[in-house]
Each structure stands twice: as structure tokens, then as C-alpha cells.
Length: 408
Length: 121
Image 1 (cartoon, one colour):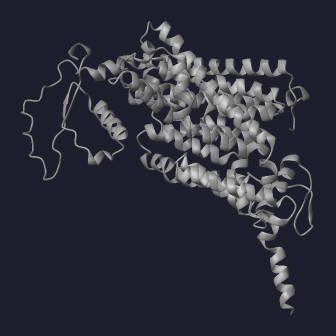
Image 2 (spheres, each protein chain N blue to C red; image 1 turned 60 degrees about the vertical axis):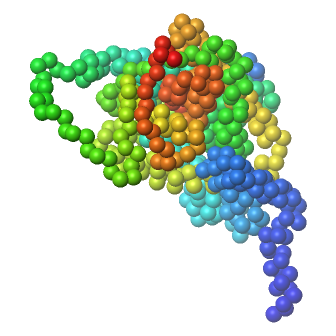
Image 3 (cartoon, rainbow over the protein chains, first blue to last red; image 1 turned 90 degrees about the vertical axis):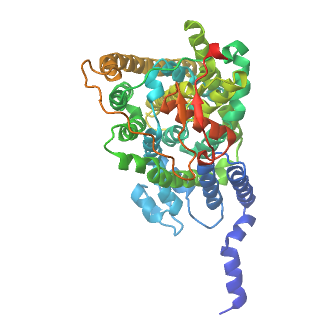
């Protein structure tokens, strides 16, 4: 045995050699980006539950030689073309079974994203955590949830203008819904090649809501509007809370069948919470299940941030369009709020409109904070929760519409 | 993308505009439909809500006096006194205060919560 040859072979097969190969520098850039995202998640606490997992997935997928995620295998799966394994074997038709046999650990995790399982299970947990009481007490807040979807469609139009295909533009636009699982669900179906940048844009902007929204809220409202104290709403009965998820599932899914996985799981989670006889299931959906799925979802989404795909001009365009989508959705919600302020004779504080951009409960908290800045005795939180949860339903409907148009 | 027409795969600005407007209208339509359902549901529940809010006529009035207040356990903050504030609102207010102060709620002591009306300020 020649020791030098053996050491040389070990060196050439190590991951370090991969950095010196053609395009290897891109992996280094991505590893640096993963470290920045880890810093933002851990130190700055930007959506840490997701960002830490996404960043670590990004780190793992960009370590040369680790073989945890195979971009070319997923490309072959999506396109229906043959795939050549590392051993040289040609596989004519890639299926989930092939991926289980040939793929790395993150490929296996990613099957849950591709099959739409993780976003739907996250919605189950979100439903179990959400109290729709404020929405039931003031159903008109559904209109604010609708008007705050403006950014989705403006960003979609902007993305087409910048040269993206229809399905790609739809996936970029949904960032304006400020709903991570919905954005991941739609992007996986329509433009899986953009999943990494879209997920990063969606979660980063959700974390930045307290910085993005207040200047827009100030610009779109007058001091008198911001000081409006809203009346306490009526009590909502237990029966209403139980019937609500059943009625929403039936009506929304009949209207747009493509929303079934998201709306179905959201409302099932809510029914588990409200029916009063499934406390154990509700608790599992809110905590254990949610946490487990979050780990799988975050790491597998991070795994899609492969250097050769992520480092492109399109990523910068997506990040900018995401910001536009968020800002315009906030404008849309505030415009809706202003209209309701006028129609109600000044009884509705338009600041609750900005909470229509999902991002539960962060956006409602921002409405509360901005409202209190102008009237110390004003508590808008419960009033803003109505549009906030309406935004979740609104963004699921927007995603369902885009999926039925571009999903083929 | 499998199964979609070329006009949707590479839409013109006109097509994209039409899809955007249609999408926004569909979201409104869906939520307006839901608004109607929720409103009808709320109206249908109104009689039972009123019934629950009012004690039924002729319902027996408890004859026994309420039990005497038990002394507070050692080390507790004592009973929180609420004036014109429901327990739900009180819980909400305490949560907001804890959030604003960035302190765990069990480290704060609330003695009483009173509703101050606008005409009292």
C-alpha cells in the first residue's frame, strides 16, 4: 500500500477539494450566507424557529461531497427526464421510491415538501393555535383580509414584467400574502426551482414586519384616524366557534377545490381546538407535531438553496419583489381600513387593516403598538386579530386561485 | 410546466393584468361569501346567546350566602380585584403589560384592574 497515494486519494475525495473544483467558490459563498442567516436567527431572533433550520439546511447542502440533497435528481423528477446516478446507472423515470433508495437524507425530508405534506401539517397546527373569535365577533374584518392580498397580485404582475414565467410570477407574488407555509406550498407546486429564495424572502420579511409596516401605516392614515378607539365586540358562543371551521371548509373548498389541503388542515386544526373533546389532539397539533414538522420543513427548504441555483440575478429580483409585495399588501389593507373608517362614520381604526397580511400574530401586534403610540388608552390587539386571521384564509384563497390557473 | 397553455406559461402584460385583477376579485368573492355565511350564522345564534346571557325567568335564586373569602396562601399576591372588567379582558391586559415590560407574567403583581371611562379621565 502506497501511503502517499492513499493520502492523495483521501485529499482528492474530501469535501475540501470540492471548493477548489470549478464553481467551488459558490459553495463557499453559500456557506457564508448560511452563517449570516444563522446569525440573524440566533442573535437577532428573526423568525428563529424557521430561519435556524433553513440556514442549517443551506449549510449542509452546500458542503461538497456530503450528498445530502441532489438538485439534478429533483430536476429530473419534475421534468420527467432520465437521471444518472453517481454509480453511472441510468434511471428512466424518477419516483419517490427511487428518491428513497438513491437520495440523501435531505432528499428524503424534501419528499414531504414536494408532496405538500409539511405546509398542510403546519396549517393544522396554525388552526389549532388560532382563535377565530375576533373574526366571528366582527365578520366585516374578512374584507380587510381580502384587501390586504393586493400585494400578491401586484407583485405577480411585476414579476411577469421582469421576465419571470407565469408559474414563477405566481409563486413570487404569494410572498405578499405574508404566509410562509402557503408560499412554500404554492412554490413547490408551480416553481420548485425558486423555493429557496422565495422561502427566505417570505420569512425574512415576516420577521421585519415591525420595521416595514409602521412607516406605511403612518403615511396612509391621519393622526385622527390612528386615535380612534374601537368598541368592544360581542361575545362569541362556543357553538359558533365549532360550526365556523366546518362551514369555512365546505364553502371555500367548494369555491376553490385547489385550496383543500391548506384550508382543510387549517380548519381541522381549529375544530380540534374548539370542539372541546379533542384537547389531546389539539395540544399535539399545536406543539409536538408543529415542532417536528417545522424541523423537517425548514431543513428541507434550506437544502434547496444550492449554490448553482441560488446565486443568480433572479434571487435579487425575488427578494426585491417580495418587499414590494409585502409593502403593497400593507397598503391594500390600510386602504380597506380607510374605506371602513369612512363607511362606519369613524368607528373603525384603519390601522387594523395592515393586520390583514396574515403573519399571525405579528401584524396584529404592530397595529396595537402603532395605535398605542397615538392613544395610550387604545387597545387594538383583539380588533386587529380579526383581519389577521382573515388574511390567513385570504392568502390561502389567493394561492388556490393561482394554483388553479397555473397548475395545469 | 406540464399542462398549461403557452399564453399562461409566458403571459403578456395584458394577460398578467387580467389574471391579477381576476385573482383579486376571486379573493374578495370568496371572503364576501364567507362574510355572508358568518353573518347568517351569527344571526341564527342570536336567540340562544340572549338566552344564555339572561337568567331564565323563575329560575331559583340561591338561598345560601356566598362562602366567606378564604385567606390568601402565604407568598401569593392575593386576590386580583376587577372593577367593570371581565376576567377575559383582565387576562388580556395582564398579557399585554407583561409583553410591553418584557417580563414573565408570574413575576408581576396586579392588585386591581379598573375600567376608566372617557368621561372619568
